[in-house]
Amino acid sequence: MKYVKQSLMILFGLVAIDQIVKIIIHYFFFYSETDILGNIIRFRPIHSTNLSWGGNYISLFSNMGVVVAINLLVIALFISGYSFYRSKKPISSIPANMTYVVGLAGSICSLVDKVIWGGSLDFIQIPFLFTFDIKDCYLTIAQCLFIYIGIKHHKEISVTEYIKWCFKKN
Image (tube, rainbow, N blue to C red; front, side):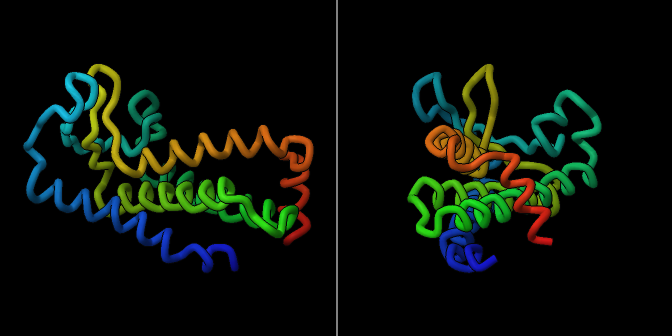
């Protein structure tokens, strides 16, 4: 938990950016639509009430209780995963710190979206593919960095070792 405290300012800053942008769009630009980068990227706000990407395809993932529980699990995994990483590597790398902070920020934004907004206010569209928001960018950055760290440290840190570490902590 001490690693959470060290990153609180950046973490809350990222969450605030995501939520303030959504508030501004909701109140002033919700019915606006414009090209950002030709026909490749558009500003087109929508309120996605399926509660998750999986909710578009499987109704279970549109259930508020299920998606909040999954969200809380993901937040716990970011915190415990980073704590495990720091137990193995007391001096953390910039990619590991970034993965932790942007991943946790994206997960918290996702939880706020579900609980406060009743879904996600997405506004960046790649036509004919999908619409996303800042939180999704945070999570994508975290996923890419996580893969990089996993490849770089695959001989030093394993999922099995993490699971054993989790059970020894309790």
